[in-house]
Each structure stands twice: as C-alpha cells, then as structure tokens.
Length: 174
Image (cartoon, rainbow, N blue to C red; front, side):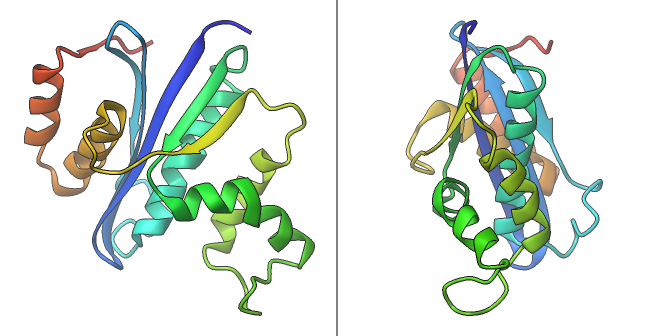
C-alpha cells in the first residue's frame, strides 16, 4: 500500500429533524486539504433530516473514497459519532443476520443508509478502518470536518476560515 490517508467526517443538523449537512475532509501531513466534500441540497431530505443521518452520510463518503480514489492507500477514517462507529464496527452484521431488526425488536433506524454501510462493512481485507474520535476537543481534523458541515448548513464559513488561517492549512484539491 502507498501512504496513509487520514479522513475526518462529521454531520450537522439545525434542529433534529431540521436542515442538515455532512462533510468529509482529507488532509495530508503538509497541512494541505487534498479532498473535501460537503452536502446540503443534494440530499433528498436535507431540509428535514437528522444529525445521525448526516453523520452516516459523511461516513459513507469517506468509505466510498477509501475504496475508489484511495484504494491503494491505508485509510484511517475518524468519526466523532459513537452511533456511526458502533454501527459500522459491530451492529451492522448482527442487524443484517436478524433481518434488520435491532435489539429493541424493531426495524433499525436509517435502514436505507445502514444497508449502504453494510456493503462496506463486509469487504474482505479492507484498506480502511473506522475509528471514534472525540468531538469538539481541538482535534484539527474533527474541527475542520465540523466547520465544513456547519458552513454548508448555515451558510456561514467564518469558523472554517478561522481554522484554516490559524493552522496555516492550504487547499490542494486533487
């Protein structure tokens, strides 16, 4: 495998449900952002979505990148959502074997997205791992992902601009 790729994902929602956005940020050791993706109006339910759905969408974007654009790299995907990380790393296989019924004996929430995640969770010998990170704990990648999502959701990029400037991060989109 080539060099290691670090990705951070996040989701944001004003109200729950409410207007939402997600982000996926990839940056390298030279503090250059080499890929960024944000979502808003292209999500079918973006005006009436939930934070969990937006977190899952960000993770899906990272997994898609890991298996396509960065398939020859070792990818570490950081996510601050315990729900997403636990779902991906352990719950999905159990849910699938139980016909998508959770431990509460009801159909799992966000079933459409859970099934999309499951495709990635069942890859033999994946080049990626999904890791929990603390949210809002001054971890640069997590702060960037949050700022991207918030900027897109609220149409206010001031937090993002401040983080980029203070950390001397440049955009180098491939």
